[in-house]
Image (tube, rainbow, N blue to C red; front, side, top):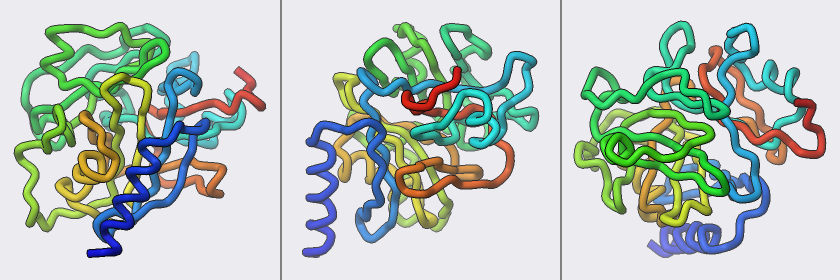
Length: 246
């Protein structure tokens, strides 16, 4: 109990402290291991990247770095089809490549409510899909995924505390004022319920969105980490301003 409280206190301190540029660190919450990356949308140039000018998906952190320069941070950024095109809404540099999907469907994406991660000017927000459809936001970049992990401070209603479905998972949560975006990846297999509680209780974020669990990967040079694996679809990344090439 004491250990759990200490871990929660550490996460609460991290949530209350001003985030340095792409501050990634390992953490433990309720006995599970995670890596958590704090992004400040007002100062960190967080963007989405899917394909090059010829339409060829980047597919990997290394391929993206070869074109734009060193990445200060990167993570897989939403679900995609076999050809690596986005499943739902996808906006890159203000251009909508895929429309918003509001209907239920198979798999995790269609387990409503799902949501949109919208990167605007100076802020970033996770928004539930029907709310986004009713009140569209001005997104420079956006990716739709699902399910929502936390909706207005509450866990997704279909998450079960005693679930035995475990996977490596990654997601993103945002503060109410849009000034904090926190991206997390589990460093061991966790349930949806466990992962969602990380955002709700451990990080105190009112909105959080699941990004994936089949291809979850992180590129965090400050930690000496760059995960490999199958080729990805959209990639969330912050280009290192000291070495940017495009």
